[in-house]
Image (cartoon, rainbow, N blue to C red):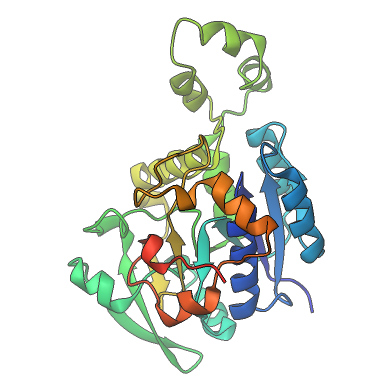
Length: 306
């Protein structure tokens, strides 16, 4: 069967959490329709990552050398109809019939920005957004107008957690944010001598943003989302969804070693979790499914090892 979704996942210093992401994704969304690409920043725990990649040989791994360039080359080669992004601390605990998702895109092609797997009727209603109801493939689906979103989540259309987008739309958005002058793009590469020199006197972040260089998953998400918000009249207005299927279990950070993790415990630092991973521990995704989150993000209360 031809793959229909390119799943682009970003990871750094979290082999145990990436393991749970992949295990849960393929439990609820079959691998027959999804081709996973892992953009992997090599820093800590390379041995454990290699062990993990052997467990999921169908995943295509790109070792990051220049985030912007690596991502753009990957995106250019995507030939599937849809794109799903992922971050390594996300865990799936439910699914939506892909026939429902496909029919939603086909029937509402002019107004659908994406099909979210991180919204629930209850949480959206509680936030005050207007929800409309329709059907696809004989099942109930809902939509919200993200251009009129009343919460930070519902007015944030471009995200890397768990939304399926038309690949052509993703490429259009990112192409719009980028600067297309070859000279400028070479001069202002994040790793260029000019940027390194300028960084000694001014913030390179604002310079890179001006020229369309995202240099991390966070900037890829936030800069492209901001462009969507500022150009909403040029984009489809609705995010469709059926139910909450995934949540980010935020228990640690990856950019530094965090001695005091989000709940004040040493148990969830990247070093501590990697030691557990080496000992054979895995995130208990059954516990996550049986104690499912009520929102897009949760914490240590949903995080249990087995």
